[in-house]
Length: 238
Ligand code: ATP
Image (tube, rainbow, N blue to C red; front, side, top):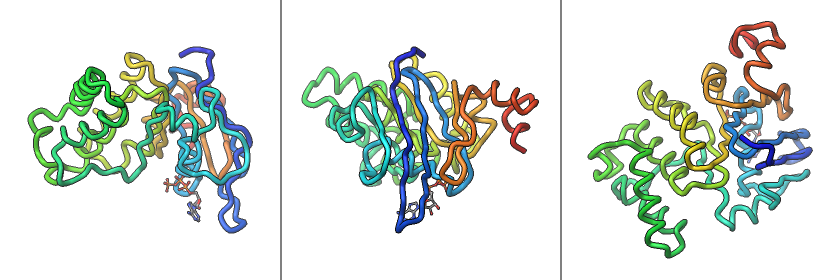
Protein backbone atom coordinates (compact mmCIF):
# COMPACT_ATOMS: atom_id res chain seq x y z
CA UNK A 1 0.00 0.00 0.00
CA UNK A 2 1.29 3.50 -0.81
CA UNK A 3 0.18 7.09 -0.23
CA UNK A 4 -0.85 7.34 -3.87
CA UNK A 5 -4.61 7.66 -4.24
CA UNK A 6 -6.27 5.13 -6.53
CA UNK A 7 -9.90 6.14 -6.02
CA UNK A 8 -11.24 9.41 -4.74
CA UNK A 9 -14.98 9.89 -4.28
CA UNK A 10 -16.26 13.28 -3.13
CA UNK A 11 -19.82 13.94 -2.12
CA UNK A 12 -21.44 11.35 -4.35
CA UNK A 13 -25.20 11.78 -4.57
CA UNK A 14 -27.51 9.55 -6.56
CA UNK A 15 -31.25 10.00 -6.85
CA UNK A 16 -33.83 7.75 -8.44
CA UNK A 17 -37.03 9.73 -9.12
CA UNK A 18 -36.08 12.29 -6.47
CA UNK A 19 -35.38 9.63 -3.83
CA UNK A 20 -31.77 9.92 -2.68
CA UNK A 21 -30.17 6.46 -2.50
CA UNK A 22 -26.68 7.89 -2.01
CA UNK A 23 -26.54 11.07 0.02
CA UNK A 24 -23.01 12.38 0.01
CA UNK A 25 -20.56 9.48 -0.10
CA UNK A 26 -16.89 10.49 0.24
CA UNK A 27 -14.02 8.03 0.45
CA UNK A 28 -10.49 7.46 -0.75
CA UNK A 29 -8.77 4.20 -1.59
CA UNK A 30 -4.98 4.04 -1.68
CA UNK A 31 -3.01 2.28 -4.38
CA UNK A 32 -2.40 -1.35 -3.45
CA UNK A 33 -5.11 -1.39 -0.82
CA UNK A 34 -7.78 -4.04 -0.27
CA UNK A 35 -10.75 -1.84 0.63
CA UNK A 36 -14.12 -3.22 1.73
CA UNK A 37 -17.46 -1.48 1.48
CA UNK A 38 -19.71 -3.09 4.04
CA UNK A 39 -23.36 -2.54 4.83
CA UNK A 40 -26.83 -4.09 4.93
CA UNK A 41 -29.14 -4.76 1.97
CA UNK A 42 -30.10 -1.60 0.14
CA UNK A 43 -27.39 0.51 1.83
CA UNK A 44 -26.04 1.74 -1.51
CA UNK A 45 -22.98 -0.49 -2.02
CA UNK A 46 -23.81 -1.59 -5.56
CA UNK A 47 -24.79 1.92 -6.63
CA UNK A 48 -21.49 3.29 -5.29
CA UNK A 49 -19.46 0.57 -7.05
CA UNK A 50 -21.35 1.07 -10.31
CA UNK A 51 -20.61 4.80 -10.24
CA UNK A 52 -16.90 4.21 -9.54
CA UNK A 53 -16.67 1.60 -12.29
CA UNK A 54 -18.04 3.99 -14.92
CA UNK A 55 -21.27 2.07 -15.53
CA UNK A 56 -23.59 4.44 -13.75
CA UNK A 57 -23.21 7.70 -15.59
CA UNK A 58 -25.67 10.12 -13.99
CA UNK A 59 -24.77 11.24 -10.49
CA UNK A 60 -23.74 14.34 -8.57
CA UNK A 61 -20.30 14.68 -7.00
CA UNK A 62 -16.78 13.82 -8.16
CA UNK A 63 -15.05 10.53 -8.78
CA UNK A 64 -11.41 10.24 -9.76
CA UNK A 65 -9.62 6.98 -10.64
CA UNK A 66 -5.86 7.53 -10.79
CA UNK A 67 -6.67 11.10 -11.83
CA UNK A 68 -9.18 10.13 -14.54
CA UNK A 69 -12.96 10.09 -14.65
CA UNK A 70 -14.46 6.59 -14.33
CA UNK A 71 -15.38 6.56 -18.03
CA UNK A 72 -11.85 7.53 -19.06
CA UNK A 73 -10.30 4.99 -16.70
CA UNK A 74 -12.61 2.33 -18.09
CA UNK A 75 -11.58 3.15 -21.67
CA UNK A 76 -7.90 3.02 -20.68
CA UNK A 77 -8.46 -0.53 -19.36
CA UNK A 78 -7.59 0.50 -15.79
CA UNK A 79 -10.76 -0.93 -14.26
CA UNK A 80 -12.05 -4.45 -14.08
CA UNK A 81 -15.57 -4.70 -12.65
CA UNK A 82 -17.33 -7.85 -11.54
CA UNK A 83 -21.04 -7.28 -10.92
CA UNK A 84 -22.85 -9.23 -8.22
CA UNK A 85 -24.69 -11.30 -10.85
CA UNK A 86 -21.69 -11.96 -13.13
CA UNK A 87 -22.02 -15.30 -14.91
CA UNK A 88 -19.86 -17.03 -17.53
CA UNK A 89 -21.04 -17.84 -21.04
CA UNK A 90 -22.56 -21.24 -20.38
CA UNK A 91 -21.97 -22.59 -23.89
CA UNK A 92 -18.23 -22.10 -23.54
CA UNK A 93 -15.73 -23.95 -21.38
CA UNK A 94 -14.04 -22.21 -18.45
CA UNK A 95 -10.87 -21.62 -20.41
CA UNK A 96 -12.75 -20.29 -23.44
CA UNK A 97 -14.47 -17.80 -21.15
CA UNK A 98 -11.08 -16.59 -19.97
CA UNK A 99 -9.70 -16.49 -23.54
CA UNK A 100 -12.42 -14.10 -24.70
CA UNK A 101 -11.55 -11.62 -21.95
CA UNK A 102 -7.77 -12.08 -22.27
CA UNK A 103 -8.01 -11.26 -25.99
CA UNK A 104 -9.96 -8.06 -25.38
CA UNK A 105 -7.58 -6.79 -22.70
CA UNK A 106 -4.35 -7.83 -24.48
CA UNK A 107 -5.36 -5.69 -27.51
CA UNK A 108 -3.51 -7.87 -30.03
CA UNK A 109 -0.42 -8.60 -27.91
CA UNK A 110 -0.24 -12.42 -28.12
CA UNK A 111 2.39 -12.78 -25.39
CA UNK A 112 0.32 -10.71 -22.99
CA UNK A 113 -2.79 -12.69 -23.89
CA UNK A 114 -0.97 -15.90 -22.98
CA UNK A 115 0.26 -14.38 -19.72
CA UNK A 116 -3.30 -13.28 -18.77
CA UNK A 117 -4.66 -16.71 -19.58
CA UNK A 118 -2.06 -18.54 -17.52
CA UNK A 119 -2.74 -16.29 -14.56
CA UNK A 120 -6.51 -16.76 -15.00
CA UNK A 121 -6.19 -20.55 -14.94
CA UNK A 122 -4.04 -20.31 -11.81
CA UNK A 123 -6.45 -17.99 -9.97
CA UNK A 124 -9.56 -20.02 -10.88
CA UNK A 125 -7.78 -23.20 -9.75
CA UNK A 126 -10.43 -25.48 -11.25
CA UNK A 127 -8.13 -28.32 -12.33
CA UNK A 128 -9.32 -30.20 -15.43
CA UNK A 129 -12.80 -28.74 -15.04
CA UNK A 130 -11.46 -25.57 -16.68
CA UNK A 131 -11.80 -27.44 -20.03
CA UNK A 132 -15.44 -28.33 -19.42
CA UNK A 133 -18.51 -26.35 -20.36
CA UNK A 134 -19.38 -23.93 -17.54
CA UNK A 135 -23.05 -25.03 -17.53
CA UNK A 136 -21.94 -27.95 -15.32
CA UNK A 137 -20.13 -25.68 -12.82
CA UNK A 138 -21.41 -25.11 -9.31
CA UNK A 139 -22.17 -21.53 -8.25
CA UNK A 140 -18.83 -21.36 -6.43
CA UNK A 141 -16.88 -22.57 -9.48
CA UNK A 142 -18.61 -20.02 -11.70
CA UNK A 143 -17.77 -17.26 -9.24
CA UNK A 144 -14.13 -18.30 -9.06
CA UNK A 145 -13.97 -18.17 -12.84
CA UNK A 146 -15.49 -14.69 -12.87
CA UNK A 147 -13.04 -13.48 -10.23
CA UNK A 148 -10.16 -15.01 -12.19
CA UNK A 149 -11.43 -13.22 -15.29
CA UNK A 150 -11.52 -9.89 -13.46
CA UNK A 151 -8.06 -10.24 -11.89
CA UNK A 152 -6.00 -12.05 -14.54
CA UNK A 153 -5.72 -8.87 -16.63
CA UNK A 154 -3.88 -7.24 -13.72
CA UNK A 155 -6.14 -4.18 -13.68
CA UNK A 156 -4.99 -1.12 -11.79
CA UNK A 157 -8.32 -1.29 -9.99
CA UNK A 158 -10.51 -4.36 -9.52
CA UNK A 159 -14.06 -3.71 -8.31
CA UNK A 160 -15.88 -6.80 -7.06
CA UNK A 161 -19.53 -6.63 -6.00
CA UNK A 162 -20.18 -9.14 -3.21
CA UNK A 163 -17.65 -11.72 -4.41
CA UNK A 164 -18.40 -14.22 -1.64
CA UNK A 165 -22.17 -13.92 -1.25
CA UNK A 166 -24.05 -17.19 -1.75
CA UNK A 167 -20.99 -19.42 -2.15
CA UNK A 168 -20.27 -22.82 -0.63
CA UNK A 169 -17.73 -22.95 2.17
CA UNK A 170 -14.80 -24.14 0.05
CA UNK A 171 -15.25 -21.45 -2.61
CA UNK A 172 -15.78 -18.79 0.06
CA UNK A 173 -12.46 -19.67 1.68
CA UNK A 174 -10.66 -19.72 -1.66
CA UNK A 175 -12.14 -16.42 -2.84
CA UNK A 176 -11.30 -14.71 0.45
CA UNK A 177 -7.72 -15.94 0.18
CA UNK A 178 -7.37 -14.73 -3.43
CA UNK A 179 -8.61 -11.26 -2.54
CA UNK A 180 -6.40 -11.08 0.54
CA UNK A 181 -3.22 -12.37 -1.10
CA UNK A 182 -3.19 -11.75 -4.83
CA UNK A 183 -3.33 -7.94 -5.25
CA UNK A 184 0.23 -7.35 -4.02
CA UNK A 185 1.79 -9.70 -6.55
CA UNK A 186 -0.09 -8.20 -9.51
CA UNK A 187 0.03 -4.57 -8.36
CA UNK A 188 -3.73 -4.21 -8.16
CA UNK A 189 -5.97 -2.19 -5.87
CA UNK A 190 -9.14 -3.96 -4.79
CA UNK A 191 -12.45 -2.41 -3.86
CA UNK A 192 -15.18 -4.87 -2.97
CA UNK A 193 -18.51 -5.02 -1.18
CA UNK A 194 -19.68 -7.42 1.49
CA UNK A 195 -22.31 -8.07 4.15
CA UNK A 196 -19.94 -9.99 6.34
CA UNK A 197 -18.07 -8.29 9.20
CA UNK A 198 -15.86 -11.28 9.89
CA UNK A 199 -14.57 -11.52 6.34
CA UNK A 200 -13.80 -7.82 5.93
CA UNK A 201 -11.96 -7.94 9.26
CA UNK A 202 -9.78 -10.69 7.79
CA UNK A 203 -9.44 -9.43 4.21
CA UNK A 204 -9.26 -5.65 4.25
CA UNK A 205 -6.64 -3.03 4.94
CA UNK A 206 -9.46 -0.55 5.48
CA UNK A 207 -13.23 -0.60 5.32
CA UNK A 208 -16.10 1.85 4.96
CA UNK A 209 -19.33 1.05 6.72
CA UNK A 210 -22.27 2.32 4.69
CA UNK A 211 -25.91 2.56 5.72
CA UNK A 212 -28.86 4.29 4.06
CA UNK A 213 -26.64 5.93 1.47
CA UNK A 214 -24.21 7.42 4.00
CA UNK A 215 -20.77 6.48 5.28
CA UNK A 216 -21.02 5.66 8.99
CA UNK A 217 -17.39 4.72 9.71
CA UNK A 218 -14.19 4.50 7.75
CA UNK A 219 -10.83 3.13 8.82
CA UNK A 220 -8.79 0.05 9.63
CA UNK A 221 -10.96 -2.81 10.95
CA UNK A 222 -8.90 -2.96 14.14
CA UNK A 223 -9.17 0.80 14.77
CA UNK A 224 -12.93 0.74 14.30
CA UNK A 225 -13.32 -2.25 16.62
CA UNK A 226 -11.17 -0.47 19.24
CA UNK A 227 -13.28 2.65 18.95
CA UNK A 228 -16.29 0.55 19.92
CA UNK A 229 -14.34 -1.22 22.64
CA UNK A 230 -14.54 -4.59 20.92
CA UNK A 231 -12.20 -7.36 19.91
CA UNK A 232 -13.43 -7.41 16.33
CA UNK A 233 -15.78 -5.65 13.96
CA UNK A 234 -18.60 -8.12 14.32
CA UNK A 235 -18.68 -7.63 18.06
CA UNK A 236 -18.54 -3.85 17.57
CA UNK A 237 -21.66 -3.73 15.47
CA UNK A 238 -23.80 -6.46 16.93
P1 ATP B 1 -27.58 -5.26 -1.64
O1 ATP B 1 -26.68 -5.67 -0.54
O2 ATP B 1 -28.98 -5.75 -1.46
O3 ATP B 1 -27.03 -5.54 -3.01
P2 ATP B 1 -26.75 -2.48 -1.84
O4 ATP B 1 -26.11 -1.96 -0.61
O5 ATP B 1 -25.85 -2.91 -2.94
O6 ATP B 1 -27.74 -3.66 -1.48
P3 ATP B 1 -28.00 -0.79 -3.82
O7 ATP B 1 -28.26 -1.93 -4.74
O8 ATP B 1 -26.93 0.18 -4.18
O9 ATP B 1 -27.72 -1.35 -2.34
O10 ATP B 1 -29.36 -0.01 -3.61
C1 ATP B 1 -29.51 1.16 -2.82
C2 ATP B 1 -30.93 1.66 -2.92
O11 ATP B 1 -31.16 2.14 -4.23
C3 ATP B 1 -31.98 0.58 -2.65
O12 ATP B 1 -33.02 1.15 -1.90
C4 ATP B 1 -32.45 0.22 -4.04
O13 ATP B 1 -33.80 -0.21 -4.02
C5 ATP B 1 -32.32 1.54 -4.80
N1 ATP B 1 -32.06 1.37 -6.24
C6 ATP B 1 -30.98 0.77 -6.78
N2 ATP B 1 -31.04 0.78 -8.13
C7 ATP B 1 -32.22 1.40 -8.45
C8 ATP B 1 -32.87 1.72 -9.67
N3 ATP B 1 -32.33 1.42 -10.86
N4 ATP B 1 -34.05 2.38 -9.60
C9 ATP B 1 -34.61 2.71 -8.41
N5 ATP B 1 -34.03 2.44 -7.21
C10 ATP B 1 -32.86 1.79 -7.22
